Image (tube, rainbow, N blue to C red; front, side, top):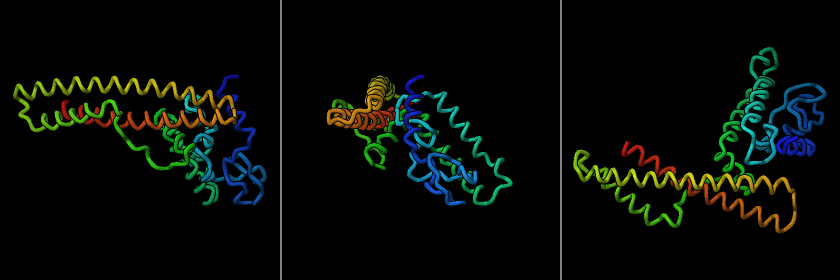
Length: 240
């Protein structure tokens, strides 16, 4: 059994709530299920349920893409409108709402960067977007780049000066793309570090310090990566 399955089984044993604690129809207890065991009515996904739990995965950053997709399609079929055409309006509404939550959860978790940003929000309790900021060692260079970009925009595109500026900007773009790739490699390593820490399941002060350090490093790298990505996109659109 692989690590993903072990972690999923562990989370299942903890009876994490997938829906309300009480069935909306018969008021019997509901724990960890999308359907009431007593009346078999579909249950709405709890607002407290995170996207990882919604799709039956632990809070890991190196999820198996094929398993994630398979689970999404399995649950999507469960809540497909065709199965609820003869059901009550309440059940139809709940199935549509659950399907919408699943779609959002899948779109978020299938992308490694969005997955990391979402996990950061869960772990730090922050629902605000990660602010973008330039890497400190590139700050002066980026200021110069912005000046060059403005000069190029104001130039006569047929002039030799404009062509020289374009060449300079292309070189800068390639440098930034390499830097972005380096950041993504660092993020992948941090993702593995996070997963290993979660798998150890330690509750020591040292583990908490390591946890906070990994989260901070991820937040900083994601911030820098978004900043660089925005500049690269701006360059590409301008000198295309």
